[in-house]
Picture 1: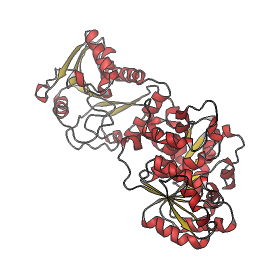
Picture 2 (picture 1 turned 90 degrees about the vertical axis):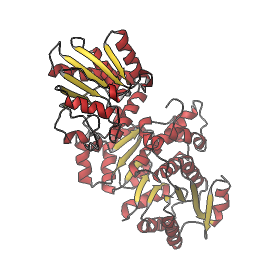
Picture 3 (picture 1 turned 60 degrees about the vertical axis):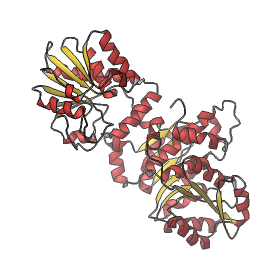
Picture 4 (picture 1 turned 120 degrees about the vertical axis):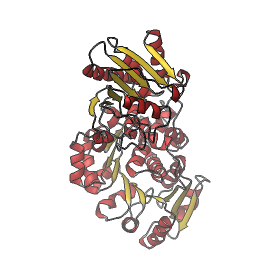
Amino acid sequence: MISAERMAQVDENAAALGIPRKQLMESSGNAVAREVRAVADPGARVAVVAGRGNNGGDAFVAARFLSAYDVSVHLLGRAETIATDIARENWDALGRAGIDREAVGDSRDVDLPDADVVVDAMLGTGVTGALRDPEATAARAINDAEATVVAVDVPSGVDADTGVAPGAAVAADRVVTFHDQKPGLDALEAAVTVADIGIPAAAERYLGPGDMRPVRRGPPADDARVFVVGGGPYTGAPALAAQAALRAGADLSFVAAPETVADGIQGFAEDLIVQSYDGERLAPDQVDALVETAEAYDDVVVLGPGLGTADETVEAAERFLESFSGRAVVDADAVSVVPAVETDAELVCTPNRKELAEMGGPEIEGADELGERADEIADFAADLGHVVVAKAREDVVADGRKSADDFRAHQNSQSSEDGERTRVSRAGTSGMTVGGTGDTLAGAIAGLLAGHDAFAAACMGTYANGRAAELLDDRRGGLVASDLLDALPRAVWGDRDE
């Protein structure tokens, strides 16, 4: 089962894998035609009521596959307002093929012929809310017709995720939905056919541009603040993480660091706000004040970059997580403490292969093997109870916030929506083995975590960090982590080819 939003993401990922949307539309239209042929004999009258989006485009294709039937196509709106190139191409093809078609520009002109089958292709799964004219008038006309009604993907006016119709809606006898079942269709009395249209499993398994839809199409996070607790032995790591958070959408980025290195961190970028505390490293006596600051401002915390592994620092990291109840990305020197800590915080942990093993996860020798061991990483994440981003040439993102038993049940289910809580990212270049790219990853996830679910933020930040390297097109080597900062905004919000 797959939600409407997730389906749109998968569709974009399929296109990025090289499967043209036009090809998917051809498969979808063919599936609709098969359903019509299942309910009506050749020669029957078929009226196709189509909208101006790709849902209508699917029906234009279906009309071409119904040459043995008396078909008429009724477009709701002017032809020049068809929303996509591929739908417009298929509308034009109907005219050149001599298939009966008309554009209905006014709801008062909706007049369906007597038909044996009506195909409802007005609106697809991406449209919610009550129908407006001319679709509302057309829905009533379809319901009044003495015909078998076949809906394309979802009956128009019905929410694909909930099955609720907030106003007028088409009462379909049959629904042809694509790739996987939509949750709301279970609530309908219609017979539902799930058509395989050729979207490969990789479009769901591997992160791609479709996974960036929540940030690219959603509202920006309101007052997003990131608070990096890092530095001491190292200064570059917290500066990279804090700058990456800004490039991924944070409004403000703070760094809490020992006074001995605060000026050095501030020197990396004037955009950072550096707050110093006494001492040379993070120690337990600084924790209460840091937690109080983070929770007072509802900050997303990045804990770990450049902290070091001194005993008192490790103890301080434990105490911070035990006390903190907000959202945090736990990286580098702090990840090792997570398995032993009980916390109310919502965590995204970003271990490399060595750190993953130290946390109690699987021991993975080769960088290429991480994606192949994704199920083991998923089991570990479920036992841990947090989101885990395991870093290597292929990054694995696993949502462990369900119980271990529930998580394994979902992993083994046939549900695309529940069973895909482990994702793999192949984005990136060979140059990303250079130090510091994990710090930009932690910051990018934190910048996105301010406005998104932890798993979604982890997926988007992981893909964007790798995509930033690809956008630099660094074929000759010489990449450094700070180079990613300039490319991150394009990776998050889209480049010309996405």
